Image 1 (tube, rainbow, N blue to C red):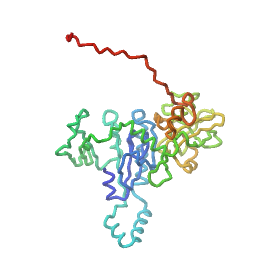
Image 2: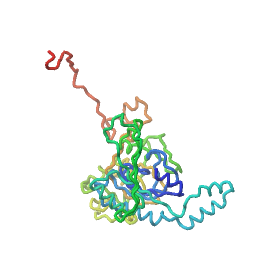
Image 3: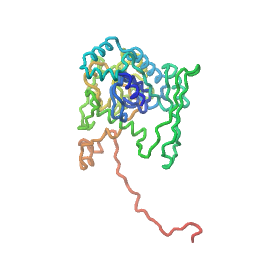
Image 4: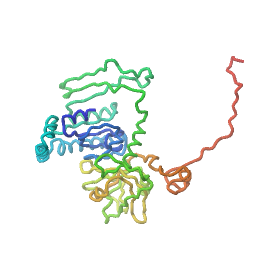
Length: 403
C-alpha cells in the first residue's frame, strides 16, 4: 500500500479519505483527514480511529449532495495545508533533541533509518465512481488538490471470470506517464491485485455493517484499537442530552433532505436512528420559536465552521423531560467540551446485529430481547413462517414426446 511505502521515508503521512461507502479510518458516511504513523495491515473495520478532522455527509454516495461533498473535501484540504503539511518548528526541533538524547546504539539505529519530518505528504483515497457525475467530482478534486502523482488501477479480469481464470498473469503490465501541459502530474497505470478464490466474499454492505459494529463497540480511550463486547448495545446506559435552550446541550437537529420531515414528525424520524454528533462554531439561529431545536429550513452545518465528533444512536426520546438519550463511543470529556452539539441524521441505518442481545441464551433469545417480549420490542418485527399446506409432488410426469 502507498501509505506503508511512504512511512518508510516519512515519519507521518496524511490520509484524506473521500470514499463515503468504504472509508479506511471512519464509519461510512464521512470524509475525513487522518495522520498515520503506523503501517496499515488489516481490513478497515479493525483500525477505526478518531481522525484529525471529519465531516458527515450521511450517505454512502455523494450523488445526493455533490456540492456539500466538494465543500467538505475543500475544508479538509485547507486543514491539511494549514495544520498538517508542515509541522511546527517546535515539533521538528523536539524530534531532533529526542534523537540526540538516545543511547548510542539506538541513535545509530535511528540514523540508519532516519525519516523525513519537515513535511507530511498527503495521500487521497478516492471513490470508485469514475463515470458521469463521479468523473466530474473526481476532476474537481484533482483541480483543487493538484496532486503530484496519480495511481490508476486498470481492471483486467471480467466480472464473469470462471475458476480457471484465477491464474496470476505471467507479465503484470504497468505504465508511468510523465507530467505534461494537460496533465501536470505523474500518471501510473497499475494492474489490480490478481483475483483469488480465497479472497473475501464480503460485499460492500457487509463491510459497512462490520464497520458500524466495530465503531459502536470501540473503546476510544485506548491508544491502539480496542473493543468492548462484554455488553450488547441494548444493555449500555445512554448519555442524556437536554434540548432546552437554557441548558445549551443541543444546538440544532438537522435531517438531511429535511424538507420531507415536518416538525411534528421530527421525533419519530429521529427515534432509533443513527445520527452524527457535530460541533459548530456558530450554529445558525432557528427561525422557529418551537421548543425542539429542529427547523426544516435551517442549513446544514458548514464544513468550514464545523467538525464531526462521531456517530450516535438515538436510544430513546423523552418529550416530558425534553431529553434525548444517545449511545455513542465518543468520550464523555469530548462531549462535555464540545457542547452545545448539533445532531445530523442522514440515510445510514442501524444494523440489525446492533439491536440484538448476543449474550442471551437460546431460550432467552426465543422470548425476546433484554427481557422484552418480541411483540413489544421496538423497531423490529418477528413473524413466524407459516406453510400454505402439504405439498403434493407428482413423479410420473414426462416431457412431451417421451410418452
